Length: 200
Image (cartoon, rainbow, N blue to C red; front, side, top):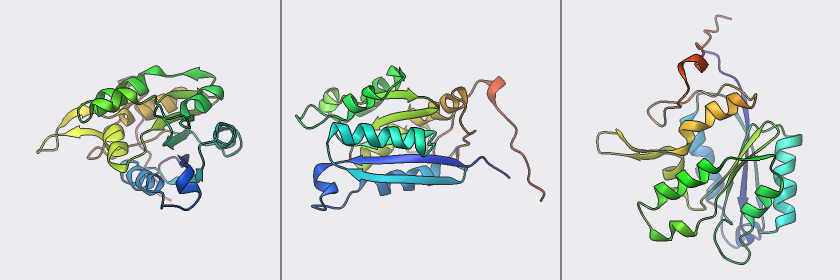
């Protein structure tokens, strides 16, 4: 089978991780999950930076405009602490806001902790890039992307990534195909393409 290649930007935002005080766990968790969830060949463009709004804005702009990433995922900096400025930086580079992603992430997280209402995650479009702020912890990253399943593997809560491939279709990005045992992408029937068999 032949699948479209995808460039995905990953941005971990943490003062201490960027200074080497502790090892960043968000980027490895994201790379591992995306590699398992997508059938497409992926080129990751990953960066760890401090909680500085100007640096976050510059990194998001570079990943969207120069690196050509169809999807950009951030981790960290979305709470109410004084140095948590990821949402502000994300909104500053946005062409359009996609409110549903943040709403859904908070719904999922509220099943576990009441402090999920303190999360200020946003998602936006910049040109042909979808930018989503994710939580900072690997467990929460997986839960919000993949959703929750029962003991038989049946979905209890559908994760936000089910909507990502079709969103990227609509903004002119590559056709992302998911591994259904991890997360099943939803598309209207009219938007589903047959996968091309590569006989070369």
